[in-house]
Length: 242
Length: 242
Ligand SMILES: [Fe+2]
Ligand SMILES: [Fe+2]
Image 1 (tube, chains in turn orange, green):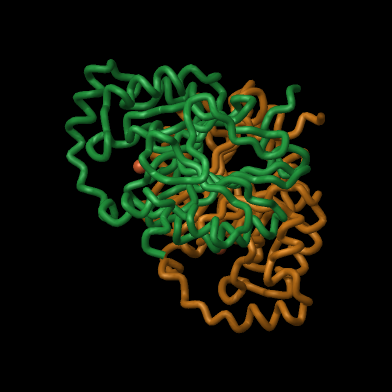
Image 2: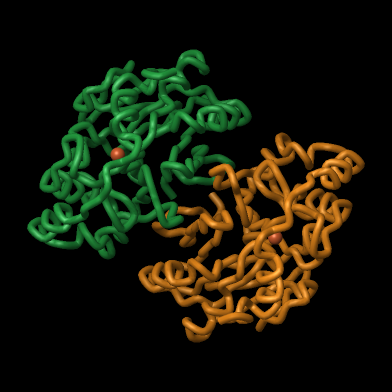
């Protein structure tokens, strides 16, 4: 038995998956039960109060509010979080073009108590997409790079399907097979997957690079409704219009 | 380290929380990685195909599809599940008035491989509500008895707020404080809580019995839209209109 980041409330890491239903975004709260230090991944502006209430009830001290990338579909809650919680720092990839207290790059770590999240750059959906991997590699927060049986679109921001395919295969599919995949979104009520499952069943990533590029260039998705508001706001931690 | 039902994909129990967004219902899949036997809690008719696909991808054999009670807000998927998956048995409380292959009562166990769920009768929302408790008491599936920071309504079916208060205090709040609470619904994007948290922060259950009864009799909720279709269907495992 290794001291892995298990999801039990007793003993192991404090872990909460939270859902924002308008943009179908998952926010993740991770905390160390001893030091009470915590990290929040991808908070959404509309659910900041819910998340702060939970952080306070669990008696956690939010050290870092981090975005996996500059979102196009919702306004991040990191800026408001910083205003409401004293001492919280915002974080995002240095390649995102966004401002934040901490600019992340490959190999960086975000520590909270005895736990940490390691940064792997996984561009392709945007240039500044990162995957945050638990220190023991028991879970990975893949943002919009790898979704459950899907992946982020590559037709706006700095989207590039070749880059995305490469990122997922070299930075995510190289994690242990049982590593849990926690994405930034799900639209079908799925909450978690594993590396093994996505390697086996992801309808896009199981294809060759050529087929993948072809699929991604024919999705014909509508432009995200909020993109013209969300992206400029998210470049300044969502503080743009507050 | 005890052999607890941890939620890692590697080694421990296979565990998936799934969401149906129309009725905001959580369905839970639990499986034993060795024997591949599995149990599905509260499947919804509309998401049966999603759930079957996952069960097949994970190479699980669904032994039991169980309802925590006779739902009023959605039609159960247990009947259709039985038709589509050979060998699956349906289960529900003997006090629900519904038919099923297995009629559950206090102290019964549903086993799947080396794991089991123990039945605790928790009436109050309906007469046939049960809470399913993991053998090691690391998690409890509370149906509509205890919700995260809330509880099931008591103003239809055989609802009785006194009974519900008593059930939660004697059958759920007596579980270990770190026991994870997985409810049948959540309407705010919350996915899990713990016994300790609900004992401390549940706005209804932290009140006295008298205050609780008063709160529950003044909710003035609208009648569930699907009740006249769902309840008769659920009395026959949802097979009513298939
Ligand atoms: Fe995105
Ligand atoms: Fe119900």
